[in-house]
Image (cartoon, rainbow, N blue to C red; front, side, top):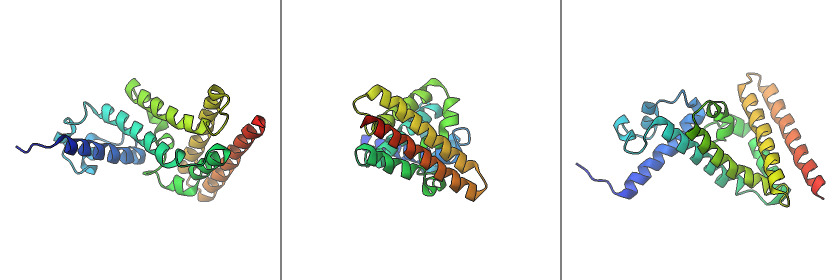
Length: 198
């Protein structure tokens, strides 16, 4: 019997989490069975329980990981202040993001299913989304963090809803127009917020 090092086990677990996050965003929670999730990671079903207690356990960890990745790759990389907020919004409401589900935001891909999930998944989502929200809020009204958090959550809701709807439409022009209008609405919200602070 082969004994694996702790590092190998951790690398394998991380590979499962990363590939599961991409699959979940593409096919949804209900559309992603354990067998498929493990096959994506290049592993057998039997290996699953060496890393996770249940599918819900993996889903919760994968959603948290996807939100942390989004924060690290998009939010944390953006400039400070309203300019950074505008960078984030322009990336989020782009045709590229709409068309790239696998590497996109887990909010737009999984929000409806997360809302119907059990507490552990919803808690992992909440914890991850609050980090994102705080990154947005810090670029809004730093002197009023509580108010900024609610406004940032509202901005994320506007962006995620617009992206979800744009992905659902078969009419490409209508989808593009919706993204453009969503971008206009989000930027107006940001500018209103910024002008309000001056």
